[in-house]
Image (cartoon, rainbow, N blue to C red; front, side, top):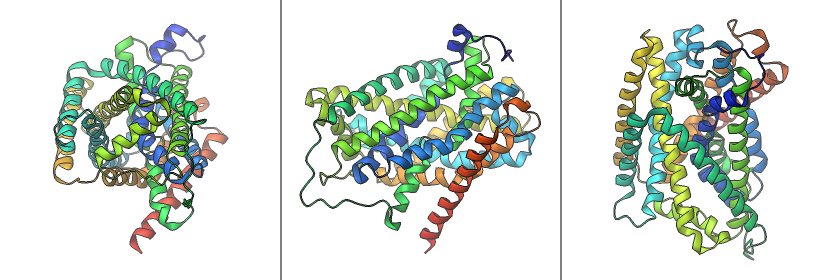
Length: 419
């Protein structure tokens, strides 16, 4: 571990940047392109506060992932084990479920966007092909390729989305005379809100990914990030994800809200509408460019998920089996193959509706949020964490507020489903 009291070096900071940006890249694909845009398209600006609130409530739990590793020199999941193997088993069980569903979900949206190029194959076939391609790239290129793609894609998407929003402001379509605004503050909209919160800005289990990616970044650069450096990396990635979430809500509100148009449930229809959000303001000339940007974004998200979920599953197996570090890479590769097979089965056999799959994935992620959030807080307050890096009054208050909110919303959703 490096000395956190040493002066901040730009060279070392650059070496530390990566894990936080990768989490942002994983977040933007599902929660932003799908749920933020739908929130704006269906409810205008009414849910903007909730999107910001969700980013605020999940902030400490993602911060703990990188801070814990920088402060202790071990992964967040190793911290889970310090408090008992039961916590590792809980994480393992949740990740097997959410990993399969989420890889299938983001992969299917990537496949739907790829179909926009006129490729004469069904969305499920394209999805499975893309997931396999991601697995091959990771098995051959490992973390270095993942890190490079994430930084390029997140920058390109941010610039194009910001441009689309600014162009949409003066070119907003007229609201239909017979338009009746939907209110999100009723029980019929509760399921949508839970789905929005589940992936906003990302599922809580992704906090373990950034912790594990810190070791991969160290292996790549030869530098292990200090707490200060890891915090900067985290803030850059998390702030980028939060700002982009707001921009996508704005894009949906400015271009689709009040027009009487709603998102299609089919993969191809949804992807076409997504591209139309940009071309309606930038111009039809940009259709191919925007389609490519959206596809590359979702492909990057799929690539990140195909790496992240197997990586955390491999870490759990290594910890529970007390296996040597040199075995981790092999176990990670095995989980990549297994995860891709499971996700392919879901896509080919059980899914006919893209939004239905994405909704199910988001709801499962939200229902597991209070469990993982509580464990993250418990680990960060552990006796092995140096006192100066444990959560202060603000972070503790925000953490317990988030956990209470997640529990109440989960209980409300389960009650509605049971009634």
